[in-house]
Image (cartoon, rainbow, N blue to C red):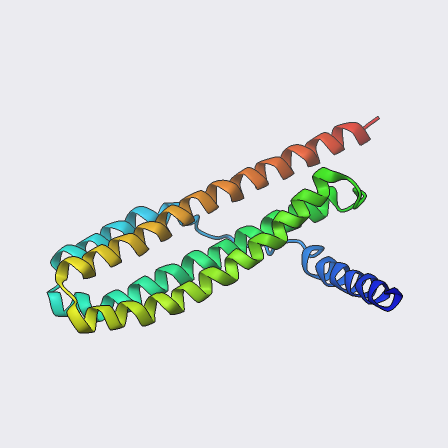
Length: 185
């Protein structure tokens, strides 16, 4: 019993140290294009292919496009998780682990990592299942439905992920301004 408790504490310290190394670094500041500005273009290009492509192309491309859309959504989810984690680390890392709100947020962050991994596995599963489905009895309607669902889901996830990212940036700016005001004589 004591061995298990010591192991759990040591593992907890190691996880906390790994978390500190990952989250303590500030995000890379790049002059990046906001994803939401690209969403209308992505939607138009996808819809043009979706409407104009021959049925054979749709059956061949749909597994790839769907898996890529799920991968993109998963990668962007990872980016949002890192932003939330860095926000937590910067502003709430000093909160005691016994604080229920901080512990709840930290636990939710770890749970989202499992959602991220599930999303990446779903992309692989989607590719395998959709390839089999479209090879056996794939109609143009099935191809278009699968295409629209995965690409539409990706666009929605990117849009909401971008909103969360902007909220975090706004909150960081507001908290830093408040800290500067409190520190000024």
